[in-house]
Image 1 (cartoon, rainbow, N blue to C red):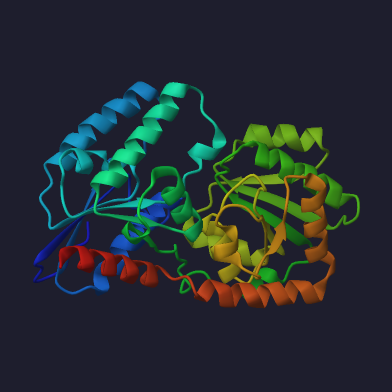
Image 2 (cartoon, helix red, strand yellow):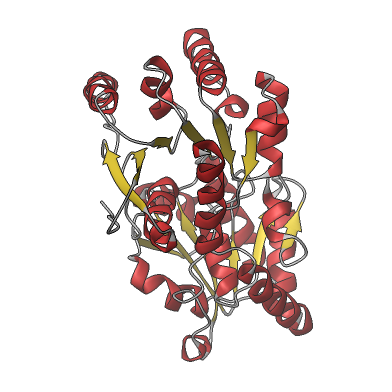
Amino acid sequence: MERHSNSSVRICIIGYEADESSGWGIARYTWQLIHNLKFAPGIDVVFTGCGTPSRKLLMRNLEKLFFFSKVLKLKGSLYHAVTPILAIPLAVANKSPSVVTVHDLLHFYRGYGSRHKMKFDITYHAYVFDQLDAVITVAEYWKRDIMRMFGVESKKIHVIYNGVDTARYKPIEKARSRQRKRVLYVGSPTVLRGIDILIQAFNIVLKEYKDIEFLIGGKVDKDYILKLSKKFDVNVRHIGFVPEERLPYLYSSAHAFVNPPTDEFSLMLLEAMACGTPVIARDIFEMQEYLGDAALMVSSEEPSELAEAILKLLTDEKLWFRLSRRGLKRAEAFTWKRTAENTYNVYTKLLE
């Protein structure tokens, strides 16, 4: 919870958890938003969190019911839910003014296990968007999707980009003084098949470039990586969860940061760029809005295309330096302070 002295306006932020060191992007977004709203005079920011959702469906639903009852009792000047599912009690209780953040709509692209779940997701999203006063989303791409899929008016949707802490994430030159070049991925893959494609690409790279090491960190099953490493005859180091204080050094030590071609944008891409490490990603969803011409883009999920991009960065020194410089400059355009300022502007308009 963050508080401001002499407060007159109470902002209730509703989320799962607020943790700057979490590997979960929504938890980091929430923490950064609360932390950077400190600049705003005359407001009192109160966070209500339900914690990381349980993996068991029954427990997850019971947790939501208990949490929703807490949200219904909140008293504030404005309410901001960081995901649509957590905005349901705001919509039901007609709490106003209220805001919801939409980070993506990927579950509508990935497919469903049942028609009932799909119907429920469509219904509650439509209900929340209709009842709440404003929608914040993190890219123009998702704004267009919200308008197309749910008929929300353009003026109700505000595009506010995610950020990166450039005071923390910056190049560490001593980390680059390595004899072997390193290719890195850190994250929580949306589609596990993306790791399969990464390791297949590593296998192709090794046939042409031997003196290299591959690292995979984050919430990826170690046994799964070991199984794929044996299958494709690649020595991949699984480094597990990486604390945030170690990430700048790790990013800086890598010659390239490679995003699985099945995955959307992640905060790790901006962080790697801020450390001067060129990134490789597939040009899907909101990727172009964040990365622009500062990344090496692939157009498909083919391991051979991904391997070709990795080899370009390993062998073309001019390309590497060009993308490194562009990445540093590009990352400077996305700050959490700007994210908070633009969010605060949405608040003030609703409170007028």
